[in-house]
Length: 111
Image 1 (tube, rainbow, N blue to C red):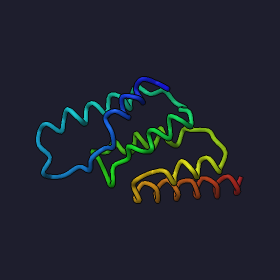
Image 2: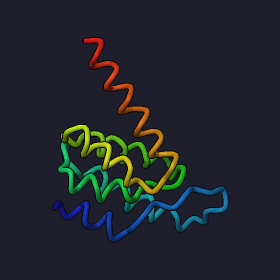
Image 3: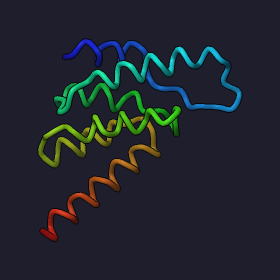
Image 4: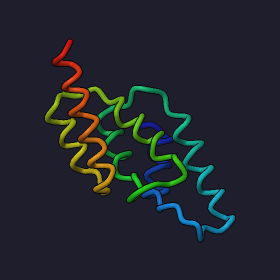
């Protein structure tokens, strides 16, 4: 497993952004952002299982979209991808992942 993913695991789940965040949040934002940007696509299933655990409940300074891009790069069969989605601790992001997965399946059927 890549070092960047292990470091993200150590940082833990992204907190939700808040208007009450202090200036010290910038350091945490930069830590997540730097690590997420260093990861080359695609990622493995095991790496995706780690990353899906760090989704914030709602949003964390748009970094959840970088996380989504990485998770969606994994190449696995449908059952394992559903397992991955279902392991996401955030209901909002689990719903987003499910909706995007369903839309992708529909688009493939049309082709």
